[in-house]
Amino acid sequence: MKVVLENLTKIFPSRNKKSNEEVVAVNNFSFEIPDGKLVGLLGPSGCGKSTTLYMICGLQKLSGGKIYFGEDDVTDLPPEHRGVGLVFQNYALYPHMTVKQNILYPLQNLKGADKLSKEEMLSRTEEVARLVQIDGLLDRKPSEMSGGQQQRVAIARALVKMPRVLLLDEPLSNLDARLRLQTREEIRRIQKETGITTVFVTHDQEEAMSISDIIVVMKKGIIQQIDEPQKVYDDPANLFVAKFLGTPPINVFEGEVKEGMLFLGDDPVMRVSSVADQPVWVGIRPEGFILDENGPLHCSLEGVEVMGRDVSVVSEHAASQNPVVRSIISAESHIDTASPVIRYSLKPNKVFLFHKETEERLL
Image 1 (tube, rainbow, N blue to C red):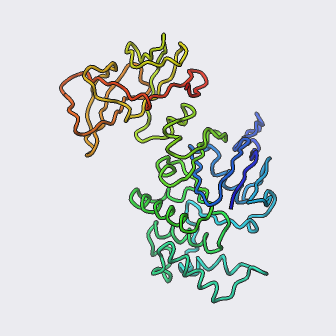
Image 2 (image 1 turned 120 degrees about the vertical axis):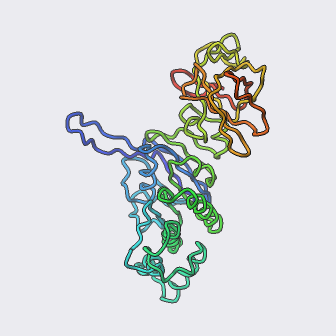
Image 3 (image 1 turned 60 degrees about the vertical axis):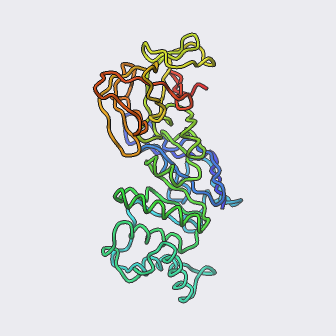
């Protein structure tokens, strides 16, 4: 099911009686979600991603714009008639019901032409339980299950109605790191097996990049960039996107382009002949540093963190906007930890220049 969001806008009234200034949570959001794809809405708290999700499912009324499921205009359709499955952050399971009863519940409320026989309801419940791999837990209560198992029940309950669109609101944020990794892999498997168009809201960029076909990066209700995860990482549209994606985060320097040469402080680090002379923000991914005893970039060596396959080198530079400069290099590289200075050359495809005022990317 293709989902089209056309100039989606949500404005909340002001809570400040003195200023009476309205809050624009989502601002003119337009995007077409392709049929059968998993789209990640990514951004910091307060960027409007959950509000967008709730407008898609009908829990929030639009201040402006249109929503289409396929060719159907569902803008004014109530949630129960949109054919969506919604999974909340806190699972929202009924504690007094068994797993089977929790999954059955949405089917028992179907009426009219959609009403199912008891056999059909049980068959569908068992089918989705197998899909999310909880078919051996149907007689348990939610309190007898782990967080990851409860999340699977919530997903099964959303899927049992065979929704046209599946909506997930930060479904992994209550899980520990190991369970989060396992559950996100399960969500991706389930989405691929069912082929349901899915919207996944998260503030965790690693989560979004690992399971999404497309990510939408948001800031203050405005779309910053839409593309495949790797393309957004490799080709950020602005400084905000560059800083939001990546672990460890991108290193940001205050730089200047003079006569086709990029300077970080006094270090002439690389040629950038296509950029006019100007002060710039410079983003360098941690993997963009090459250990080079004759390299043009000088940093003060602070320490080395061994991570197994790689080594994280912590250093400082006068032009750095981060507290430290963090570079990732091969563990096979030899680093003279007794030296006060470490020198690098840079990988051009891992260095990004941004306008000093607008913070837009300079190509």
